Length: 231
Image (tube, rainbow, N blue to C red; front, side, top):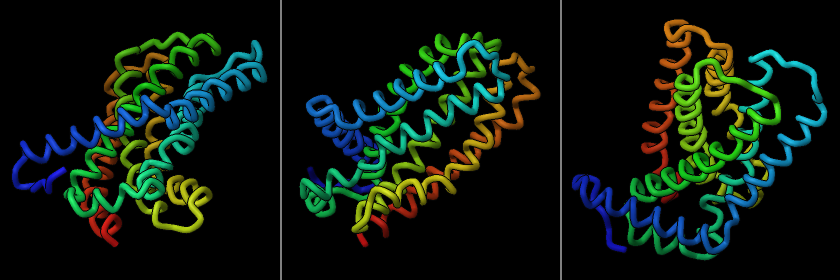
């Protein structure tokens, strides 16, 4: 793969898509990330649903459970985003041939795809297990999309940081949780509003905050990734 200059958006995008295709191909062959996050999410939902039984839950509690499952599932599956490159020695080739922003863009897109697939599986199961009837489906979709984008962005930069550490497993949760806390604090009440059918103007404050924080997270991560990746 040749070096991609960020001044040429066409070449940059082609490099990102090439890296995304490479990661998707590897994932289809091994199914390491998708299997881990899928099994964790399904088992967690089933166990919590069994424990709760027929007890009715408030929308904010339902929302908290949903985002807890998504958060820990992302921690299980996305923490090895760059560890795999280090273990297979492909990280050296990427550093020599590919612009760091292309690497981060490709990994971010891959993590977004994994989280989208996970969400597409978890949310219907969540609705069935907990007998949820979203009053504002459109608002729920917006919160889910922005929330998982923020989760993917934060998980990508944290995964890059811990890939260079000797002890990798415990570090991901310790670093990711403080970074992801603002996303969860905005996504949980916002999703609860979507479940209970709150007016769009009431939900706009959390939605705007989530959009702003997610955008800032992606922007800052692009700037931080270069020294982290090359360091």
